[in-house]
Amino acid sequence: MASFTKKAIVNTFLELLDEKPFSEITVKEIVDRCEINRKTFYYYFHNTYELADDMFREKIDEIRRNFKPDQTIFEEFLSVFDVLKQNRKATEHVYKSISARALEDYTYHLSYERMEAYVAWQAEGRRVSPEMIHAVTDCYTAALTGLSLRWVGSGMPEDFLNSIRGIVRSIDGLTKMILSYHS
Image (cartoon, rainbow, N blue to C red; front, side, top):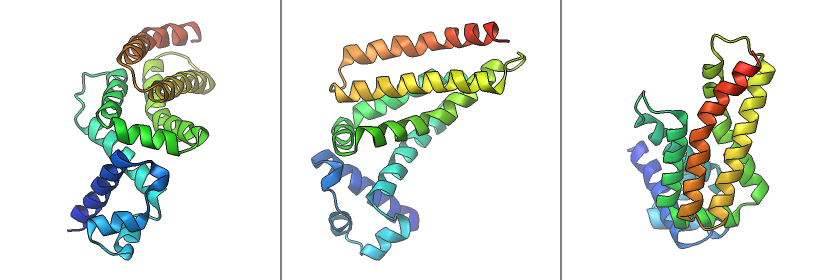
């Protein structure tokens, strides 16, 4: 029952994000629509920011669970872009409601860990310093974060997404070259 209630809160929040900006959604609105009390909401989440964080993490975890071992990290990133596009209104409302800096920090943080694991994997068997792994990870994470936010901010046009796909695919080869150069 607990899992059902939490899922109902998240789904209601997503419905509301399709209707209006994040900054206009209240806990009262969520609990009224879910027909639960405020205590139940606060049992799962401290506030709507934590709810948004949980919702995005769940979506990304779902993508990762459905990923096949032979797919690359970049195919995973492209899957995230697809989820954002499928939830276009909600994505735009979050983008317009949260400060650009906060959204950038959140997106960066969400991507960094996965990118670091990828770069470390590419560095296996090479004499690459942890500082270089960090630098390459930071560079790619910042680039993908910036491109992602620019794409959402420009209305998620298909041609821009195609450019991002091309860039994401080229990073794989570049990573190997950079790490070879520094090993």
